[in-house]
Image 1 (cartoon, rainbow, N blue to C red):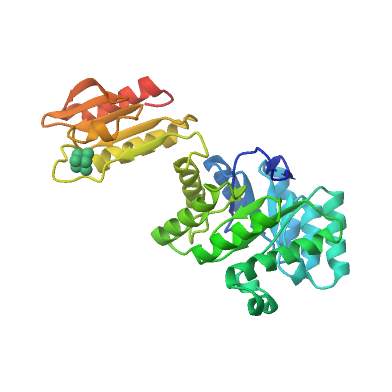
Image 2 (image 1 turned 120 degrees about the horizontal axis):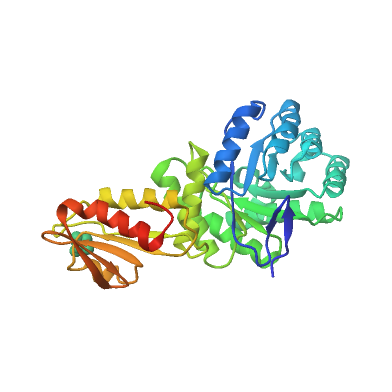
Length: 349
Ligand code: SF4
């Protein structure tokens, strides 16, 4: 059993569901912009938000930000222990540091003391840029990455601190996978999963889906961040889709066929309409909706769908669990399908 770690109002580990997190890309000192982004992330489904703390001004800004948002905040700190202390005093529920980069043991002890007093969790770990050279000469890269992270954990444990979340990240999916499997065998602390510097668009989505998804499907990982260059809202949307695809959430799923020469309706346009509808309706149930181009394969392939549509020569048929429930004319396809969707599944129109 993975031990439970509390981050503000959010519990990681034990039987709790996988927690989605993201990171703001506003200046933390721009309090209004940062709060607006945090709120947007929360509405999109983000449960923990990390903010960068590059200076004391940013650490102090957390005070007002934390007082005006309800999602727990994580302060991202590099090197300077004073920033960690100020961020915690300002209301951060978790800090991300690498004790090995903080300097003297006294400085790390100071951080631990304040973290304990304020019930702040600490995320420690490693990435490919922080692997200790001693480990690289002793182990393969994935193991060296994991051992570097465990080294940071032991530093905190020696100070009697155990409110730890551990992360080890590589931009290599394979290295990332092996490293996290290794860590899971060695510790019962919650693991934060992500592919670091995953890049842009499609490449980032593919890397994150495999890199995070493969581990989650083995029961490894308690919180995830999809890292993608650009708008962090996209990270949350991808994270939710990822969790839904592997059955870790009870969100609706859209299936649609790739289209071919048999296609009788505009599958892409209709699928986009349905996706938008499902997203706006905020249905929290594991229903499946199918949009298929033809009846030849469509109904059979979508037979597990709670509601589906398949194109015909004259329009389309609507089906539920593989059984046809209605025939519609070509001119009515979109309108009728969205209406039936609203009536049968509810929550939108
Ligand atoms: Fe082609 Fe029909 Fe399959 Fe869609 S469901 S890909 S239209 S055969």
